[in-house]
Image (cartoon, rainbow, N blue to C red; front, side, top):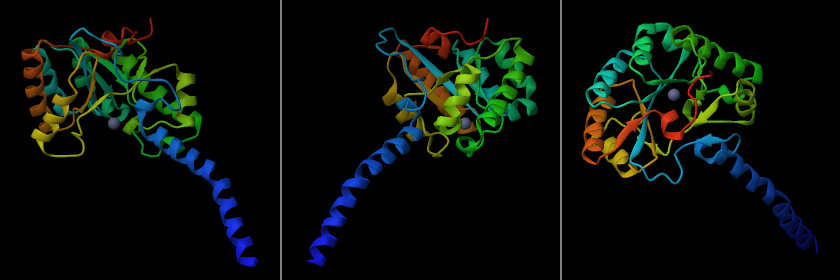
Length: 242
Ligand SMILES: [Zn+2]
């Protein structure tokens, strides 16, 4: 009798906990995938695009590698979007200025690029984002409206902060993994598979290997008749406040 009771209570606990477990799985997956738009609307590609336009985006600069990226983009007559970290702008302000002068779009990628951003109180996240805005304003005279969350991670707190700062959240649908692997062929092939009208490609202007891959990518886009444009041009949204 006792055994039956114990067994039935195990079963009822199971049914009681099942919805909690499902919610947890959805919440964890939603937080990790910027594409899912679970906490806040994220723009990660141009839906239904038929024109051969593509947006290449670079995170984590400016760095000395950014200059090599700029040189390649200019050679192939391509435009790109750079999601800059505030603390990097402090180190390389002249690189940021050059990026802006050459007609590329600059977006906000936080000041701290902290792995703990999801845990920051809302006002601390707002401060972090606003500080980076102020650096970009200093060199462009315009408030940037595009934001990319570090590591593509959002949370209810980050979403709340972004509703206060009023940025568009920009994700990607082609992840190159250039921050994970050293294998340039692997990185290039991964991007190649994702090339389609309206795609947004994620790269990092932080290493020579990405510069090497970029040259191959720009050549391929040229051969396939694609035009590399800024994210705002691709999505037809403003990059800066008027
Ligand atoms: Zn980043």
